Length: 212
Image 1 (cartoon, rainbow, N blue to C red):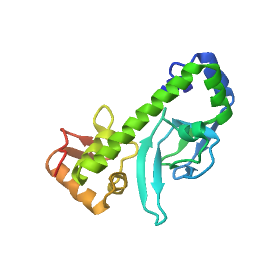
Image 2: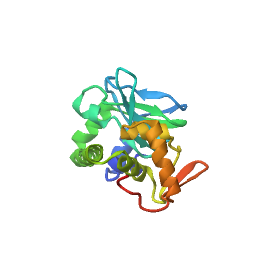
Image 3: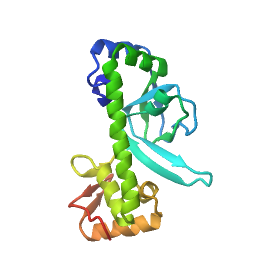
Image 4: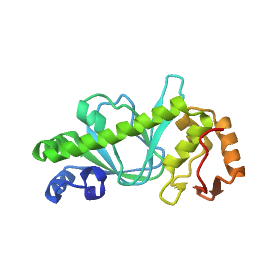
């Protein structure tokens, strides 16, 4: 399974076989919190089946969704490398199967196969760039533009957003706005023919506007 994960794509098969031998496959039902912000780190998680969401909360209970992850995605690499507590919480949005790779085994792979460490750095760089783009959107775009940008990031190659279908509250949590504002914007996008809502998914019909 690991050979289909981008992080491990170029790692020789015998290294992956050894890594999988020390990993544990766990099954979780929907709405299970896999890790909590502030937890100590011990594993790298690879999603074998299902969808999860990474999020942050404050003392008042306000939630910000960082992103959605599906089959082949992974999380927990930051804490695995720097030994610091988890930087975000992760919850399952559907029934999931997750492969848990022990910290010691991942570190051993990095020592025995240095090219993997370079791959890890490359992947971290990619995620930092994605974070930079998100901060740029928050700083420079109005709510309308942030909703448009978020919809584009969530869609697949067929311009569809599904598995699971995101709610207006989900989008509001991702763009730092209220559900009511997001609902008004989604209505305008529907009226303008920019998006279409179907059972189970949203489809982007044409390029989304950046500003109200």
